[in-house]
Image 1: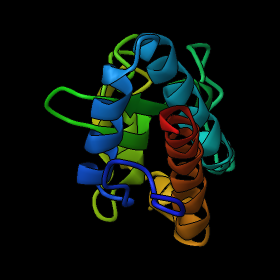
Image 2: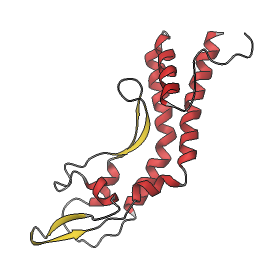
Image 3: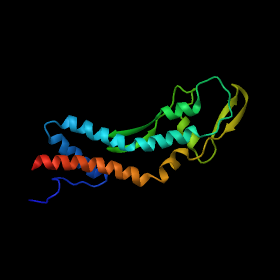
Image 4: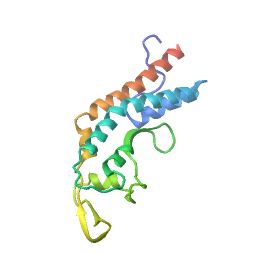
Length: 169
């Protein structure tokens, strides 16, 4: 079987990732291989996470409050996430909730909204006002380089597949 590919289906899909994870589980040191694959996939997404952090930090600020910084608090919660197996398998960059940020747990979602914004009190008192963030800051950070990030994740998957195929020979 010279020239045959890996003994499993590898495509840049959830099915391809699932079959790769199954092949890793069959290996003796499968746990270490899964950790390495997850690390390589996270490393492939780190530039995208950095772009999203940079984008939220570029949002304008008119406040001089003494509380924790909104933009910095959101930027700290942006991370690449990889899950291998279970209900969801894949790799993504996620902006996690910010519960400790002035009680504004949905800050990443609200600042990214295309319409509306969020309502807040003026210095903790009436009247209520509507604030708007930098619209689509998270989504726009990935529009130009989405194919590049997808290719980097696919390369990490293919490298692991080549490694497993070399072991099978």
